[in-house]
Amino acid sequence: MRAAARRRRAVIQPDAIRVGDQVEVPTLGLQGELVALHNGDEAEIQVGAFRVRQPLSLLRKVAGVPEPRPTRPVTIAAPPPPRVEPELHLRGMRAADAIQRLERYLDDAARAGVPWVRIVHGKGTGTLRAVVHEALREHPLVDRFELAGLGEGGEGVTIVYLKG
View 1 (cartoon, one colour):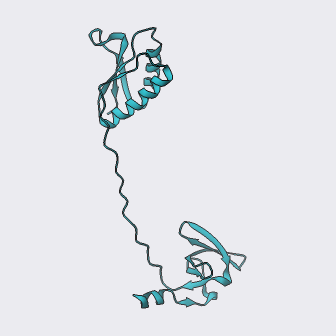
View 2 (view 1 turned 90 degrees about the horizontal axis):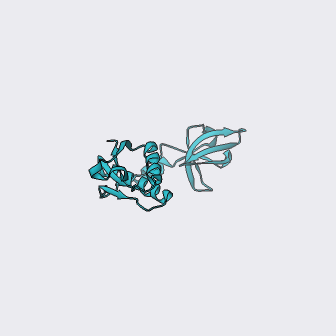
View 3 (view 1 turned 90 degrees about the vertical axis):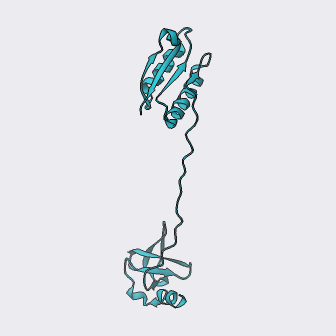
C-alpha cells in the first residue's frame, strides 16, 4: 500500500498543472483540486469546504485521484412521542402563558398521534376562550375546533381536532 501512496503523490512538472488537477501545496501541507487560475501566476485550490489562493509556483501536481476519506454513517434518532393527557387546563392563566402552553401541548399531541384533545379554558368573561380560539384558527396542526356539549363543559371547554 505504501508503493501505491508514493505513486499517487508522485510530483509532476508545475507547467503541466491545469484546472481540475489534484494539486498539493507542500508549504502548507494541503492537497485539493485546482479550481481557477488568476493572472497566470496565482491558483485557487478547493481543499474540502475551503478555497485557498496560492502562487502557482508553490503548487505540485499530484498523480491520480486522492483516496476518499472514510465516512462514518450518520444515525438520526427522533425522540419517542410524548405521553399526552387528553385535556389541557388553562383556567386562571394569563393569555400569553396560556397560548405558550397551548402551542406546546398541540405540538406534543400531534407528535403522539392523538386525533383530538380538550382545552379547558373556563367560562368567566370569555376572554381566554377568545384568545385560545384565535390561536387555534391560525395553528397549522388544527383541522377544526368546537365548543364542547353542555354535558362536557359547554362554553368552558373547546374540543380540538388535529390534522392527521
